[in-house]
Amino acid sequence: MVVEEMSAGGIVSKVATEVSPSVVGITNLSLDGNLFDRDYTETTGSGVIIDEEGYIVTNNHVVKNADRLIVTLADGNEEDAAVIGTDARTDLALIKIKVDNYVTPAEFGNSDRLVVGQGVVAIGNPLGLRFARSVTSGVVSGLNRLLTTEEGFAFRLIQTDAAINPGNSGGALVDLEGKLIGINTIKIAAQGYEGMGFSIPSNQVRRVVDDLKKYGKVRRPLLGIRILGEISQGEADLKDLKQCCGVIVEPIIGGTAYKAGIRSRDIIIQVDGEQVKTALELEEKITSKAVGETVSIVIARLPFIGEGQVQVKTIKVKLSE
Image (tube, rainbow, N blue to C red):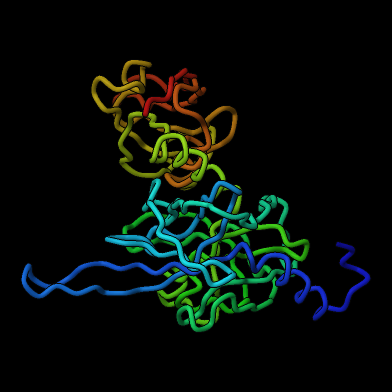
């Protein structure tokens, strides 16, 4: 698609035509009531077909507690779906339908290449299946927006001014080439962020989906520590640390960090040569690695009162699951 040669409206229309067949409606039916008077509670959301085998990515909260999932395709046909795996931490889920005929998968784009101000299109089912595959357009308003879910998980999202409403959750955010660059989530957007839409970056989606396909869960590498706190610039100066900031940790006895030599109240200041200032930065750097990978951790160890100087050590730690 040659974007420069088309009007803004023409671009959005072309993108919508190309991508809409990949967006599905999802109906979540969950049983409630007592044993003798049971009925279904029905909620709806969206999903995106990601391959010709019938795999669909959506939000975890869209499929949560489902006794039955019904997927409505672009042609109106309905298929029951099975849950392959879910990940509450990223609010993502992978489901699958039986494919009798050809389905149109979305093509993943590279969310790391997004820039603020770039045009985007959101496609989903706002307010239920009556408005299936509705299209809104806007721009990327922000990147790496740090937000926290109801479960207390913090992660970074794409912010957009394209309208994302109830029912849009699990729908597609695409660039003006029609590439999938995010999965929309209303769950986070609804928590006091009026007028803002948020999407889970496609590169993160791909990593989660790959694990859900292989293992039915996300395999996250663990360092084997507990976080005790963070060291600010002022505290670093007081403690005579040559490098600003860091994360105070407690190794889990018998864990990989403990076996490697990390001790209580050590301050992690680098991971694989990159400075660590906050607990979130430490978590992101570790979770970007693979289970079984060995990482180089630089720690600062404070001396006991009246005993010597701050020790700086490099410790190799093999990440566990």
